[in-house]
Image 1: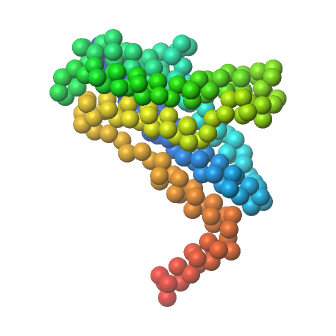
Image 2 (image 1 turned 90 degrees about the vertical axis):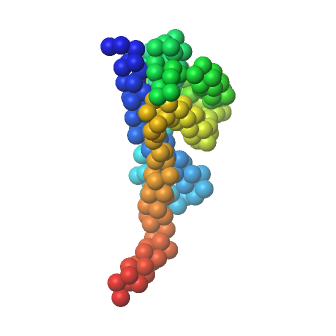
Length: 214
């Protein structure tokens, strides 16, 4: 497989992982996490089973992010992808020429801007999500205290991935992917409204149906 084909295959695979796997899961996790933070009592009273989805999504999101960032253990990650593009820059062709060196520099800086979050994600993966650290595995509160990561940090990092991949996609064929995060967030948020506050949102839904079907 030549360099150009390898590049295009990697780009397609990262685009799928980031836009169709990571982004929807992170959006759903964000909705659940926000509800728990804002109204924990009602959440666990009305939709407690979603607490297990919340935990599972958190684990999955952290593991996906860690895999996309693990530059030392694998050659299938964003860091190595940028390195590959830099090493083969003159052999990879976009519509208007080779990959500009400015793009490589900009993408590296994007990741550098998130270095603190990246380090914490890797540590949390190694000490809790993928391995049973002798200190943190049985003390989740201590993990959160020592290596705190906000959901907004994860979302910012994911948007960084989206920008990098979209830059390559636009350069290669002038096409890009719209982020589906808003769709998944609104759909899940509406569902939780109906389940957590049925007296209000259920009533509104029934009234709307009566108005549409007099």
